[in-house]
Amino acid sequence: MDFITWCGLFKIGHPIIDEQHQKLIKIANKFHADMQSREKELLIPDTLNNLIKYVEFHFDEEIKIFQKKGYPEVEITRHSEIHENIVKDIFKLNERFSEGKYDSIHEVERFLTDWIVLHILQEDMKFKYHLKNR
Ligand SMILES: [Fe+2]
Image (cartoon, rainbow, N blue to C red):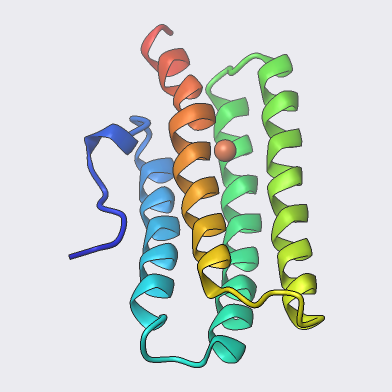
């Protein structure tokens, strides 16, 4: 069974965003599944590099969709700032790991789960209501 199960709760109601969020969840699930079998020295940088590439692409796409769908400018600015902070956090995590400051793989796991799940449920969900009320 997956570590995080994709279900209706995560649905924003925009097919591209929903598909990309599923891919993010897949990255977290793969990390969880590989934790038992791969060395953390390889698994953590691999996952974080993969994540950063995908997240930058996804955040860009998300903002373009927000603009296309008339999401208020003030919300887009606020949301972009949150995205920037997430990207910074991923870089920080990667840096801390390469400096040997990360001894627990579970901290990385918790970071992955927390931001992916919370960002979708708390922040991206606001766009769902915008889409619904157009
Ligand atoms: Fe977002």
